[in-house]
Length: 221
Image 1 (cartoon, one colour):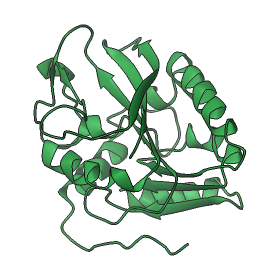
Image 2 (tube, helix red, strand yellow):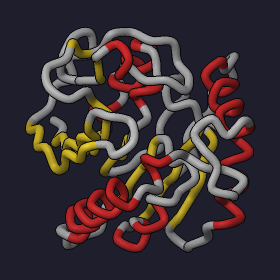
Image 3 (tube, helix red, strand yellow):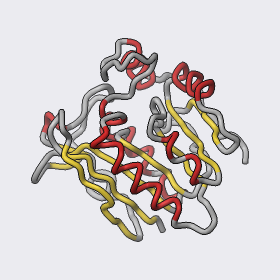
């Protein structure tokens, strides 16, 4: 498998994400990089890992997985063993280099890519866990256009409780659409993702930030 091609362009989102980690805007658990409570709080992490492990183990021939926005890899580290190959991607180069040193397995690769602009790695399944919620609609649209290359997409988004207006635009960075009583719904305008099947795997109330973390499995055409 060839390495995904990186396209050299200005990266304002990269700068924003680098600042988040440098200033520890998502919290600080004493480690050099910390991806926030959503990647560490047991009430949110343990059910998610359990259901993804079950999904991955259900295949006689293990899947190749692309983790698009792997963060500090606290979650991905628990999934690697159940895959043929696990390709972990993030936009922050220092974070990727740190992960390369900390997590080493024969079937594990790390790549520094901007998933909105660069070519994505070839894989059976893409994981996007609390990634799109931080991005502008234009960047999400660029990513959505690439998702049909996968057989499966597992998406987790932080959504408001109850009814909400989907996909209100934001500037990419630390925040999400929750303050606008909005959240990302890829099947609604302006994205209109076409899928063969959509199945909600998990919905967990966020203990600290309100709303709920919803994980959906999309089977792609």
